[in-house]
Image 1 (cartoon, rainbow, N blue to C red):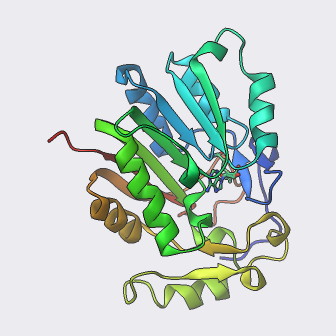
Image 2 (image 1 turned 90 degrees about the vertical axis):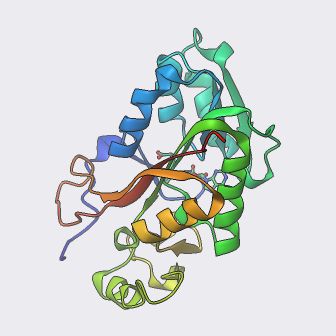
Length: 242
Ligand SMILES: C[S@@+](CC[C@H](N)C(=O)[O-])C[C@H]1O[C@@H](n2cnc3c(N)ncnc32)[C@H](O)[C@@H]1O
């Protein structure tokens, strides 16, 4: 578990402008699976917390009608000016906190929420967004949600300290800035939640989702070293048709 520096394959990783970590310009395994379903999704697909909109552009390329959202309007402006003009009529941009968005119940065919729910500061905030995702999806709608694992952001000894509580407590916990890696913390928010596959599955089931897949995965193309086998955790879940 030793490593020096961040060792990113830099062309795919870009810092956010609002200290919410780094966007990764490639589809992880769960997103790749979600994208295979996109052609069969008729209703709009929301890409929440989309950063500069890499995945939103991929959805547009596949012919989807897309709602793109991010907390930071500078990220959204980047998407506005770089989107393929031929696709712009299928794109709606909604800046701001996803929890404050006004979206009609059962109006979405799919939701991407990639690489940010671990930045939510409390269990209530995580539950609130998952509740909203469920409400906004039409029956049969698909959610793809991923969270980067704590080991990315802290030194191994801090990680081990948190992992002692794994399986014993409802939540493993939230690390604060003081515990984050020196070479990363300047571009991270004030807390990060440790989310593993057990917690993610439990929270999705609590809301009412069917969990089709939920597993940790590595990112061999993102890190030049491969010491982290569990780069992130993600799930594909669906809202049951009752
Ligand atoms: C690490 S980036 C990931 C971006 C993109 N989804 C990806 O996978 O490349 C996290 C993004 O989530 C956004 N974000 C974090 N919390 C959010 C929230 N509550 N509502 C909307 N966007 C949020 C941040 O502004 C940031 O751009």
